[in-house]
Image (cartoon, rainbow, N blue to C red; front, side):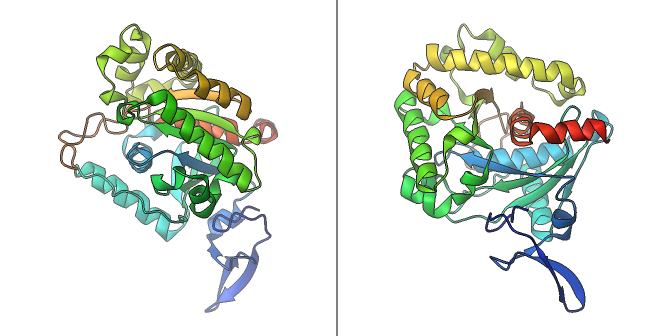
Length: 325
């Protein structure tokens, strides 16, 4: 089993503390949530590895994802859907982030440290297996140099999918800086005695509401997809996934034709098992003085999540679900 704290493969020990049985990792000695330990085989872990520079939207994306999962009545679109925090810290993190966004506040920038995961069980997403998200969020400084990634971002080596968050509007030289981020990640992975070629990659363009209209001229299908990103479209998951794959191909074209990031594209294709693209607007509008001027309207925030699950859960687990529901 994967320990969510030290990220080693271990067998959790059951011990007693004050007369209550608890599960403990034999290596890092951290107490592991009972729901995680007992449900490990039914809800396999998905390590959510968010990679990106400072101010490119990693922390806000997580907050917005929690908001969507808890506040936008997905259970009315997916009849068997629900989420569950697996420990007290995860419950607090989710509720705190949801409350902040509802109040028009933004989460603080993430400090540069090795983060404790927010553990969330997902059940009942159509066409996707049930799983447990292990969400790690660390400061963007950790992705500026490979040595920083090794010291503070070791969780990346246990992910089956790397989620590269890129805010085009915050880049002065998009082709160069996107390639630098990718290069830093690949070097860091090798220093961690892992390899990106065992992983999938999804490139997530963030803050799409801030992209200039000039960049989207000639890409009306991308603009329309984002503007029509209301949550009700998820009621038809088959068509939604098909559309999501089409948009991935169009964003790949956009990256080459509009951004001229050919070196980035070539390096990504050569360094990962597969490369997909998606785009999100975590808030729906640009913040002003650290606050939201209008009510939060997340768009396409579920797309990266669907790519994560699809690429992270082994195919054999999907077959077991359909054979033994």
